[in-house]
Image (cartoon, rainbow, N blue to C red; front, side, top):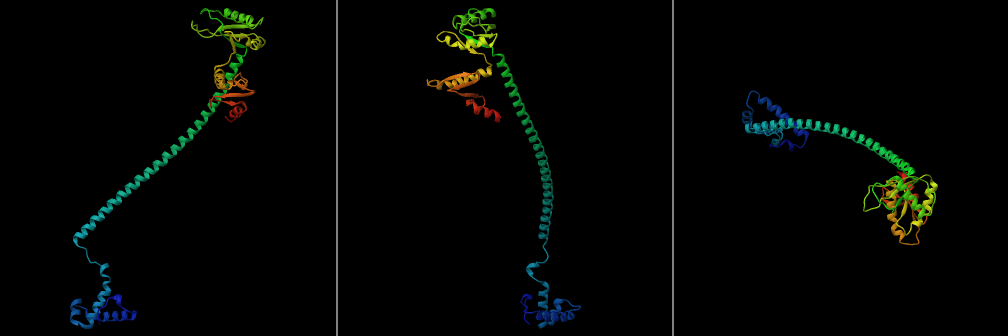
Length: 296
């Protein structure tokens, strides 16, 4: 019987026959070395034994046999290295877990800071709006208190110690001589600023009633061609708005057809009123300005 690998058996019956032969052979091998018995029997028994051993051995490549000493040492070293790597991996994972936990805590703290910052920003915005409202009211009250005042320019400034009475008499003289107004009632008048020889200080006069004040303004055109002029008294905020509006109107005034004048803190051009927007730094039509203030 030729020697064949168990992979070459054609049927289960052939495999069963081989197993039967192997059982018979096992009786003959009792008490003897396997290889010695195989040698003595020879022939078909040798063939059966060979095939049986092949069946029992399986695939040679999958059963390489015992390892050598160097191989065992190398495997042992590799196992030790794997243990060290596994231990290091555990440590790294623990550290990563700690970092992740710290990040979560920092994220929560950052969220708290952002929330508090948003609250503070809202409060600051509210405070700024409140402050602006108070500033506007204060400015309005200041301008109301100045309604009876007029500021005269160009009246000779002869000496640094001019009294209020002297200032009042100078204003009355100008109103009588130039404006042709009699019996102008003035409560008080005084120079503005420190005395300087190179410039003439204006005089601010407070009138007893609006009637005298309005009379002066109506006749102010008589100052044309003289060194005198007169203007209403406004707060610094209103003065700055008027200055910016008048500066803007210079180009419009080049066209003689345009009718341009200032009214309180408004610029009027051909009947259309403009207000100075302090945030935008430009004049805005009055209706649009009111809408902007409403949005604020």
